[in-house]
Length: 217
Image 1 (cartoon, rainbow, N blue to C red):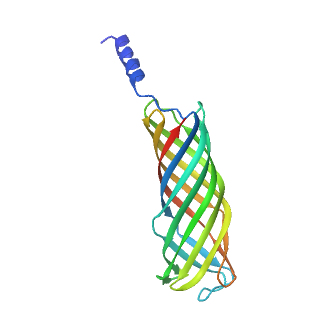
Image 2 (image 1 turned 90 degrees about the horizontal axis):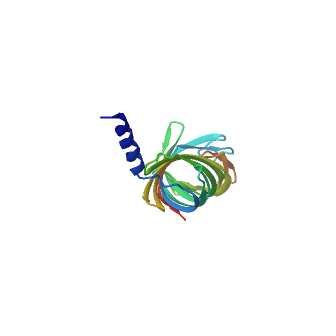
């Protein structure tokens, strides 16, 4: 077959392919979150009950959940920015103090936060749009921790947070996109006050699966 015909068919096929939805102008998005929190270290600087001074309790978590809402604006260059309000919560499964298992350790860690995010959308020429992003902001972490019926921590703290995202957008209509993304979120080390008035250092990070809808205007 003549190469000019082959080239013509290729160009026509490319032109007929569905165009990727450009996220230009204002948009809103909503997403549900499935959260897998990393194990956390709780270091009791003043000790608490059976926990010695500077003793560290390690906790792990059940699968958590959350929601997020965002308002943003996209550009023809592929860059977009948004402000996001986010809520997440994870229940404590159990814990350990050194080699001692703390099967009765329970409670939850939750957060309300505001993040400023920036993304870059890759125009693939198709109906699927990969994107990457990063964000910084502040979250209020709330800890409710118990050992059996003994209250250990019931406190909250506002701290700096950051997140990194990689996802895919699937065009459902010219103004609606289904999004699916992996998002890593972490905070700076946090300090809570235990029920005896002592300080407790805490670290937080989670791996998240975000599924949502994005609407352009």
